[in-house]
Amino acid sequence: MSFSEATDDKTLWQAFKRGDETAFGALYQRYVRVLFSYGKKLSRDEQAVEDAVQDLFVDLWQSRSRLSDVESARFYLFRSLRRKIHKALRPDQLASESWEMTDEWRLPTSPAQETEVINAERLQTQTADLQVKLKKLPLRQYEVLMLYYYQDFSYAQIADILAINEQSVRNLLQRGLHKLRQFAFFSSTILLFILFFLRK
Image (cartoon, rainbow, N blue to C red; front, side):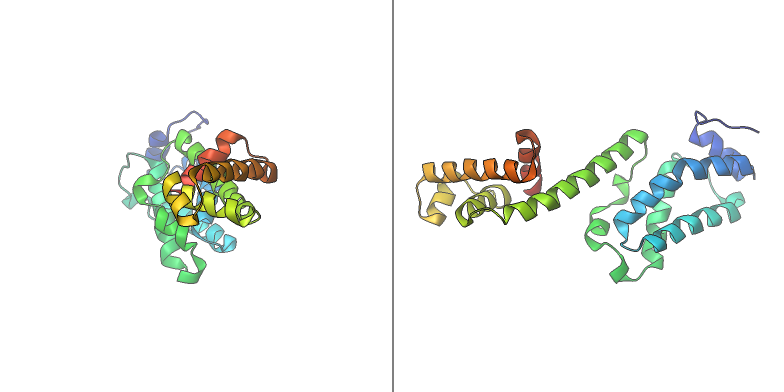
């Protein structure tokens, strides 16, 4: 039987379970790259991630006759890879923060959600870059930005903490944001979005 890129996952899964190698190959080609990309969020060891992805597909083929029907092959594969990586790797090989933050119910189950994962990765990179740039600011500007965006203090509270007036706080905040835009070449909208993201 032949399959096209438009063939839905359920059709491929059913054919694969019956031992259709073409369907299995189609599932592999459809998901191997995105699974590898996802795995790298969970482990720093790229070779170990690649091995885990390959082992996952080997295990699938060997156990195909015992597999049950699934609502989402995508979800099944992502969840299985997550468990395999956690089981196979030592704690120091796991990207602990990413691991703790990746709940199974958040796993991508559609192309749109894969796009969200990619966007989230981009945001993480921008966030890390912004944190470096923050430390290059004059101390008072840095303090105001940290207190306002990271600690969620009001202008009045920051003024009290720093023993300055509220207008000075507002001025320092605006100057700090302006410098960050110069440092990082972020648009105002993206910069504010990242800063508010850091408050969560």
